Length: 418
Image 1 (cartoon, rainbow, N blue to C red):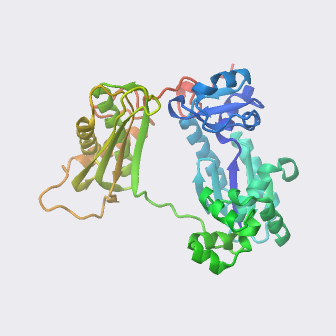
Image 2 (cartoon, rainbow, N blue to C red):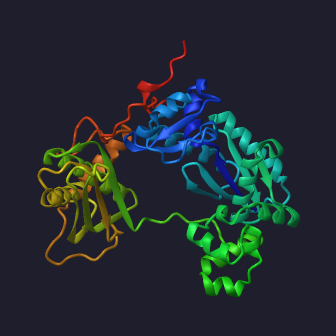
Image 3 (cartoon, one colour):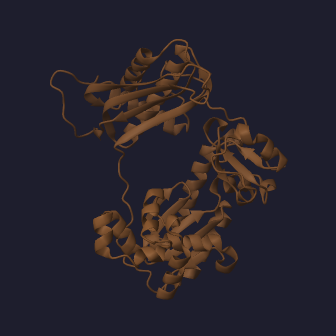
């Protein structure tokens, strides 16, 4: 059996844990730089606040409907997510963290368990220990557990937040209720193609012939179909190293001076290098992007990118930052107001197993230096050690005018009980 545990309105729920006054109130969470709405509570959804709404256009609407608008507090959300996932590992060792707010679980050797009771125990413990409400869906396959979770989320009173598909009758009923566009793994394009074939529900999809599905689509869609039929073909995913790592951000303001842009690029490049070292990889190529604000059409626009091929793979912040800064200097255009930039590292290879260059190599002092920097930054839970080309006061310069305290990750923001 497989389970899917999904946190309800996760970002909003994290805010409510430490601010009970938000219980039952409509909440909207904004993207980086307080740009647009990326998460809504059920109360905000009921008021028809659209996903992705630019807040500068919907500010008056939010005030009129008393919607609490907050900046993204990723340190808080990430920490609360880790706590939820740690609790789930107490119920089974086989856990696949699928996203920040949901995980797949596999129950091997649980044949004699009452899964409805087991799911309720998970919900109760997570709610008691973290304050985060969750829904649990359990079924014979991953795809069906996703369907079961949607049923639990849609009908909380009837299911009490836990739904188990443990019979053929329940499976068929759930699939007939699920629209084809809401099936896990079915995107818009695939949904349209299936609708042309007459598939309006997940059950309709399972009635197609295996041969036709494999010939028309691919092995991935065939596996999904078998999973929905109750034959497990999709197992828990193994964590894999990324093939490319990117750090791209919008600036809090538009920049037309090169110094500020160089500082941002250096910070982005350092972030990429840290991620490389964390997964034990080095890169062969660095790509730098720079673009103006496309929303301000009355201003002159400019978008450019440049790639740098390295003669040897590296994960040194010094080398990657230096290459990235030199690149942005060459693509920078005077008089343009830039709003966004990014650094991408690709051509990744294992740091401990790659082809050496006969005439060129990285400075041997870089690796022990990087290890020391990473160790100190990990120890003090903050980027205390930075390059001289970075802003020494801040890591990201983002507009976060509605940011709540980092209750669980910053000792200065810890709740004081009087």
